[in-house]
Image (cartoon, rainbow, N blue to C red; front, side, top):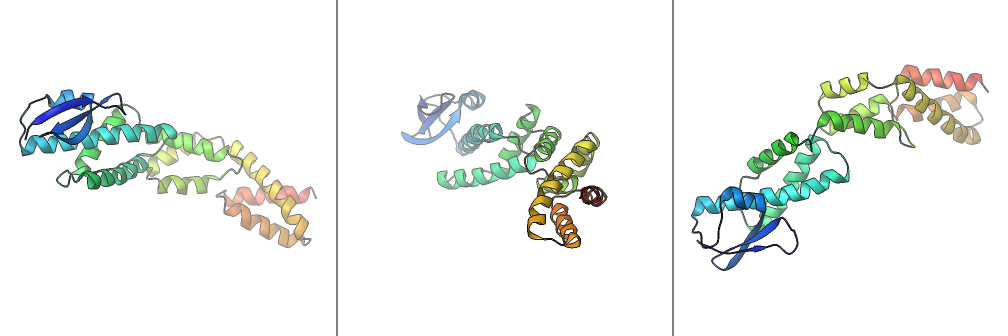
Length: 223
């Protein structure tokens, strides 16, 4: 096999298109082109061809995942899931069946971590802030469960909540409870049932049970 043409990509400024034996093969980033030392009229064997395929996968994944990360912060697990899904689709479309996508993805994730594109500690702080400051705030238990589902370690989660102002969570709980009470009281005149419905609703938002009881007692003492 011979590289018969290397041309600048018209779609992506930092990519080039590679042609082998006068047929389009794939595109790779400029950095990968230099790393592999590819030049026009260079003859390559099967091992070099596989490295070219791996470089193409890496280049495409790198371009796509940085765009993905810039949309909003993501946990390492979310990024890994995105990369695997994207890699599978790319390799299937290209017919690059000999490429080990797991190895390429691990290399890319390591590079992303080294350049601070992935940081579960920063992600966790951002995520907690988003959930607590939204117009429909969530409690600690709810947020912790969401973070676990996103693959964040328990140590990171617990450490992040140690720095959270509990007063802010109580303010969110009080605001949420009073708003919901107004809705319930319009439909349900019975005070006992009002409390039951209010408790059941707030509990689904992940707030601590003792805090829920305290806020509900406070609301009904004012009635």
